Image 1: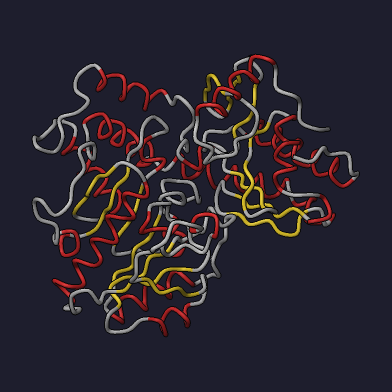
Image 2: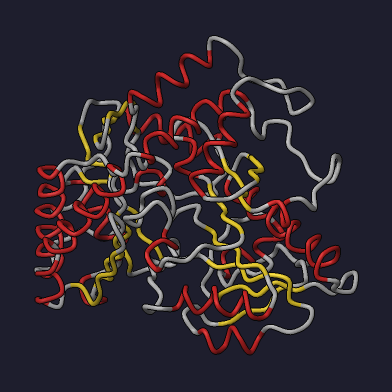
Amino acid sequence: MGFPAPSARQQAAIEQVELWGAHNYAPLPVVIADAAGAVVHDIDGNAYLDCLAAYSAVNFGHGHPDLVAAASDQLHRLTLTSRAFHSEPYGPFVAALGRLCGKEVVLPMNTGVEAVETAIKTARKWGYEVKGVPEGAATIVVMEGNFHGRTTTVISFSNDPDARANFAPFTAGFVHVPFGDADALDAAIDAHTVAVLVEPIQGEGGVIVPPEGYLRAVREICSRRGVLMIADEIQSGLGRAGETFACDREGVVPDVYLLGKALGGGIMPVSAVVANRDVLGVFTPGTHGSTFGGNPLACAIGSAVVRLLETGEMQAASRERGAQLRAGLQPLLDSGQATALRQAGLWLGVDVHPDLGTAKDLCYALLGRGVLAKDTHVHTIRLAPPLVITKEQVDEVIAHLLAAFADAARGVLRPA
């Protein structure tokens, strides 16, 4: 079963984007018009199960009533003051998020990559002013295969040639080690190292889960060597991996949490750097800022997100539905149609056997069956449905995936 041709109405909408929009994405040929929970509809009214959730930004489902109510109420009251003044929702938000993280200080920003950039500045300033690293000598250890965003500084330590090509010169000060190799990490740290920046699970890399005990080892190494452990939980956090934070899977508390995506409830960009005062206290007025960071609308939504997570229901749903999805896809491994299945909560990476085609081929086939998913690194399909997806909807996803792989095995897929 191949993907359907877009209707004339959808094709017109797609052509408008092709004509006027910068071509920095290659979206599937579907134009989404509305959504609720785990279901989206295109402009022709066709329904699809969303198995990407905007790269985990829509963890709590499209249009979650609690989040929409919080946004709507604040939208009619106050949306922006800038941080030049206090706003009513700011204090409750930073207090709630700080308590959720078990930390003392919250620095809100907007996008995930802004949180990463802020963390880099934090680590360097902390290194110079607290650790005593000579000015200009600070280094940060990062992981091979990382994905932390696409600003100039962040792509400077990316391994992705598409992200780096023709964007030089790059920012210095980063040291690469293999993800999951604690010994290599320990060996890479020296007197000038100020931090270790790590994704507890590499999402863009294909839901790459490190070996058991790795995060505990990272925590021990950072503590022993006197460097900051910075956990980029922008995709993995806030319920996606089956716990509030992916670090919780090993009982690890980093020095710095980086949060984003789901913190905005799928309504607007909200991110944050969260740490104790001895780390984030290096910032003083004028050393960092953002006009929209911590705006009242973002804070109202963020507080509602924290309330959803405080009950533990979302985390439990992630574990239960994730286990259901993983078990249902086991036949793909048994048949050899998939070469690997990696799972953490409701987050799976499915590696397609090269003989069947590419992951993009399978994503087009899934589109034709009413399932939206996204490929990465040629042969991996990422599955990250909203945590509110029902048991019955997960069964539908399983059935469509098995059928699409069976079609590919018979050679009846139309290439993407």
